[in-house]
Amino acid sequence: MYLILFTIIYCVLTRVLDVDYGPALGIYIIGLGLAKGWRTKELRDVFNFRRNKYLYNKFGLKDSLTEYLSLFFVFLNALLIANSSFTAFELLWMLFLVGAVYRFIFWGVTQAIRTGN
Image (cartoon, rainbow, N blue to C red):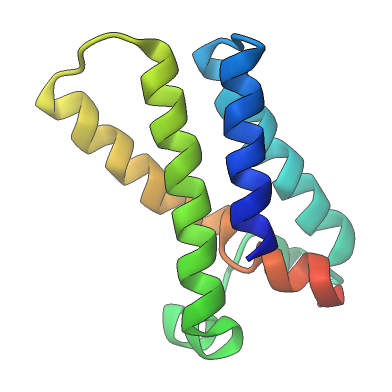
């Protein structure tokens, strides 16, 4: 729940400070990725080099959905900051990128920050 609140505050700050599309997205992902890397013990846990079933059992539904929603909010905020129309291909590409970033970097960030595992 704290991640969602942090994400909403971050999105509001990027809108108020009028941060550009790239930095608004990059600071959030890189910052939480570094925090996850600092708190985990193995490189395998930083980049989620395990099977989806194992990751889902380890992190659970609640944390997984919370992390995905927060990442989706940041991508949506960045798209709104860009303030330009995107083609269907660009939107599908963005959805693919959200999924890939979530799967390989972002999944498990709350547990890593909370417990350090």
